Picture (cartoon, rainbow, N blue to C red):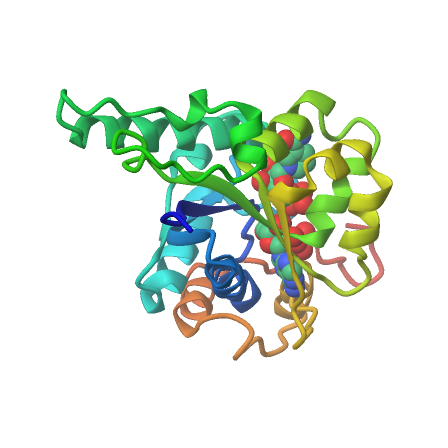
Length: 264
Ligand SMILES: Nc1ncnc2c1ncn2[C@@H]1O[C@H](COP(=O)(O)OP(=O)(O)OP(=O)(O)O)[C@@H](O)[C@H]1O
Ligand SMILES: NC(=O)c1ccc[n+]([C@@H]2O[C@H](COP(=O)(O)O)[C@@H](O)[C@H]2O)c1
């Protein structure tokens, strides 16, 4: 077997706030890909969504980035990339993946001596990616890593929500990049892939990882606990909890608490 294809795992999401489950996703994804022997995960990247996404309870990007930075103090291979969230407008995930792939391709090209012709991953044919084509010639072994989307099975299943994803974006993501999907309570990613023609067509590019130690840590539940003044210790990194306390995030603003006997 040739040398494994290098992979960068990219997680896109709100991260409002980043939880221990987000961090665990990276460990599960890296283990699963490396164990196949076909891939070698070289790094992980967290790309928080822009404030322009406008989702409820999305605290400003600067806070979400600081919380990600605090959480990643315990990781030596996952990094924050603030590019997406410094934009004022929302970018579809396909565009985010393409951006990062181009960044890594151009970075790798800069490091290559002119005599070495590098085949750009973005120019790879779909069939190369589909079959996880392992390069054999000297000129090909030096390829830049492939950026794969690391996500929970709920995000995969959101592909079926009418109007949420463009069909060409789904096809681009799964054919050119590939997905690493972490199972989540209440989801059935294998059935979901079976039910979708496009996901079945590119199923070789989708790695489903079963989280046997299932837990339902979600940012939504963390925000609910914080709003109610309940402890979130051991669900978030301590540095993230400190940051939330310091900046008083996820509290009900005083002016929304009803006056006794009055409206808002
Ligand atoms: N408990 C979990 N198990 C598996 N995947 C998860 C889990 N929590 C989050 N993820 C994944 O992390 C990624 C980033 O998600 P996001 O920041 O939107 O988190 P979330 O907890 O789902 O947020 P929210 O509760 O605010 O909707 C998504 O791909 C999501 O599926
Ligand atoms: N059409 C799209 O590209 C599309 C649609 C919905 C969510 N997303 C992304 O999924 C991630 C998670 O979003 P939610 O927190 O709404 O589940 C975000 O990064 C968001 O940008 C992308």
